[in-house]
Image 1: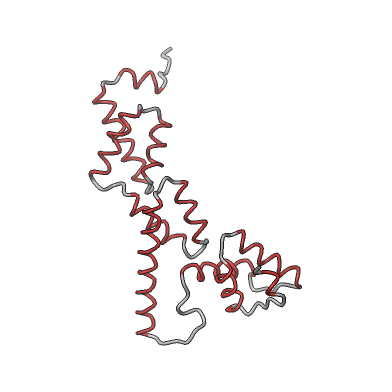
Image 2: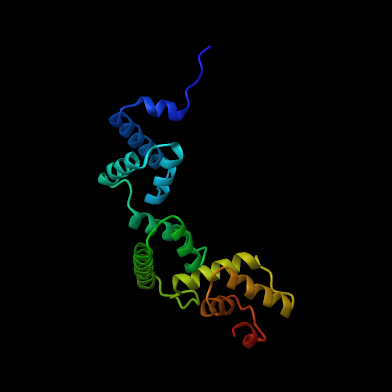
Length: 197
């Protein structure tokens, strides 16, 4: 009966060039299914058991074909999640994925420009005085979060309002974005001073 070799034993039998090709193919396979940050891809390859120098070469290979780009990854991540979570929470998630602060800031700037351009186009084609026009990304995310949390209901009392405001703060939204979302949805905050101090 043949015993199965462990991954480490298998890797030890390969020449450095074969191991590099194996790691590069593994990186391509990982990226085929989902976009990754460089740090995420590096971690995945490390978990597979490749040595650091081979991982570096494999990363250079996929970067050479523009299969991995942290700036592009950050922008796409912001595009997907900006309407649902706060900017602070989004920044923290990107930092955890190994994205640099500069790439995160650039992604937010590019996204804001895209949104402003879309708003201009909408205003040109269908002028509307809706209260939701002209909201910043943060305000729109706060509005979406509050709308989802309320699910068509209203807070029953002052305690419920306080809990709702606390929930929004925990989600990472700032005072102005929370106030704007409450105003648009006509949720009154009777004792506003208490909430925003």
